[in-house]
Length: 610
Ligand code: G6P
Image 1 (cartoon, rainbow, N blue to C red):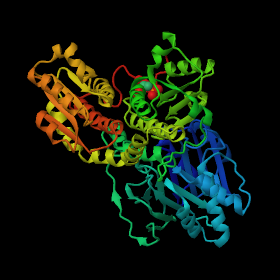
Image 2: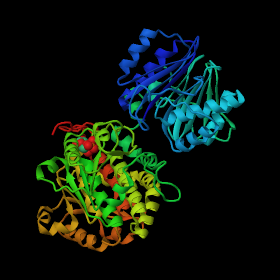
Image 3: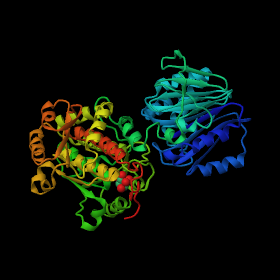
Image 4: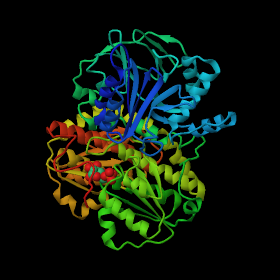
């Protein structure tokens, strides 16, 4: 997500933290800012857009400081703008805060603070609320570190936060809670950053902060304590990675890194939305009468986002019993779509800039039909032009092949389905099952990742196949399309994907020795039918691989190879989780075939031409 940098020592601090930010540029951002301790207090510069714009401003100011923090923002709350860029300050401008992640309870905290007096807001961010909260605590005690401790106890969510205080010009306080933060140790100087690449030119001795840790950093000392305030002995790690490896967090490719980020991406997507009591909050959303009034849902998207939309169809039709139609955005405009005022149209897009999806959105808007965007990139065109937007919160995705954005799109669709179900009285039992499965989705994904070696072993067995089938029934058939897309995108293996039951109507003719068929079998209701299809393939010499549930030993006996995922009671979430092994299979097959995984030939991450 966002980039964090910090420095305290005898060198010129501002140029060091800006250089650190530059080294995090590859992650994507929409605005940036820096705070340093000048002779008159804390000085701040922040700018929307590329880092160069901030650099120009800084150059004119010619700061000399020995302590500074800097931030590149990837918007989550509030559009990209100068005002919303970090650092943010409290009411007295003595506290400056930069932050990664999301503070879930920022509205509650704001309301609580309002009871004690005015909160003069300068931005639309959750971060500014944290700055005010720390500022208020500081006013009570005059103890900077204690003020951070007590404010952090009140914050809920996933965040890494770094704070400067005007009255303590030699100290940076940093807190880690679910978002990464790394400290770098120098000689009479210390550094901090959200990611190791920002530290490597300066030091290779780092301390990776643990969950809940708080650090007080001065030029000659790092004090570390755990969430309970108990001092800890820092564990220093020497990093040998080169810069390129460091950018990928030690993974060989961005794709692998992003596959592994999925549990966190879904946590961020659900944070502050799926509440413990099962209710769903979507924040600023469409009018209630739209939510209760629609009698059909259209979903429009391209590529992987379209495949997420196909799972949306199962979610909405299952729980709400309203008809859903899913369209390729490139087809939508030219197929004379029937649009009615009682439709709700969802547009799904990682980038928010895909030209076909944007053109379809404009057509629907001309008709005055309500539109909801499910978008990853904050402030993108689709996000801005939809009547309302639900951000998927997956964080920047760099690999051309989409992985974590897909999972977050499905989780977002599930949130929308639950939200509508609560308002409209959807199927109670299915709603409850979906709620439970969605809340546990990050843990299901994490469990599949723990089994990654089994998946890699299957990739070894099948990587030379001349043709691969991707098959399933119901939601598994929708995921089969995504599995096939991953395989052809990055491993360049021809694929044939369809509902498993369709095989006998033609595609089965392609099966012969050496051909591999990968089945999704994650729904007990259709399991036996799918196993019949497995046997049809095996009888013709094909190799069969299945993604199956832990609770299904029978399928494992019938298949040549099986990859197990945890038992999940919601068929749509089970199918969505089964996409992760398919992503890993494609990744390892591509790697074994020597393909350029992060930048596959002929393809682009964001397709802005129709
Ligand atoms: C390109 C990307 C895909 C993506 C599709 C739709 O083809 O390579 O990964 O699924 O565009 O992009 P969007 O940004 O609208 O989700």
